[in-house]
Image 1 (cartoon, one colour):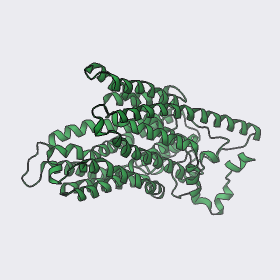
Image 2: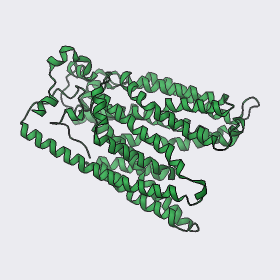
Image 3: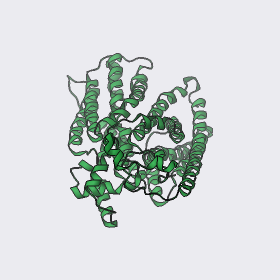
Image 4: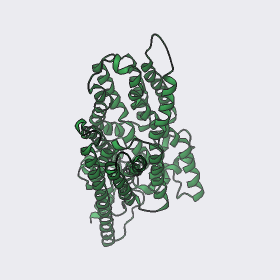
Length: 478
């Protein structure tokens, strides 16, 4: 039967040369049989994980945002003059080349996430991007600035896909949306901290170092030092976390057993890559992420958006299977706000400001879409591939969206707003379509499982099987 063919991977097959194919947690769980967690142990381990891991992710994401935007902080202090930038060269150096390099790097990032221990991968990438950031202080031409920004884009592109995988390693599917919301808030924190640090750095005077160079020297040095700390403290998985006892490591693995999405595997599996490329759910999420990013140009990150992101995370904890409804629902006020922002008279300042705030409700889309990747894609290679695909879409949006703001259409920017209206509407349609597709797929699997009869599926949670290889037991969250 299909069920048995898809889900049965017994110990004999593992002995027959396939031991490297299973998840690293498979042997660890066998050696440390702890049984089901009590409510007390589950709460205790969750607190330890939140206390030790979440701050590392939030700070890393904050530095990622600050370093990425250091060029904009320094632009008013002589950077454009000293690098002899003319015309749209600053726009190319600050945005386009960075995101093009970011996009091109994603296939390699997916392979590296699988090949190397993910904690050390993130730490080394952080130190390298800090070092590269510091070299911008020596740039004195458009060519050198472009080259450095391209390298910086390659290195910073490692963080987002890696964090989606890390979120799936440590938290249950119910816990993931709120935790992703927490570390994603590093963008908002970075905006505040970057502005405050920038104000202080701007007052540094040194005859030998131009004012703008201090932004890169100080931000880069902080990042390198922090990356060194990550190398020591950020674990690759629950199995080597220095802040967990041996028993707590086993309990942390047991917590995520029911996810059935795996913990760690260093074998790249082309079959999982192919499955991801042919998965309609993946392409709907990629399209939704792209459309969301196309509208972000209207909305700089701010307090309102941060509140909306947290609201979305807390709602998923309160109500089951609400993610796709939230994605669709938050687009409706955002679409209304965008229409008002475009149509209201310029003299109506209060109305325009209120419309601007309403648009920010769509900030929920990014975090919930990432949480669906973390929760619904099983198989280490498949999850890494899907995470990278999401950020290819992100980069395409970052490159394409600025081209819609045509100078001849200023200040109304008709093309940009019309594109935003279409993107908001399509986001609503895609998220609803995804919801009903997943409901249909879950019901189909229920019928298949019922027809096939009962079969034991315990013990195969860490065999690095994909969601499509576990049709009898894996159900998608909505």
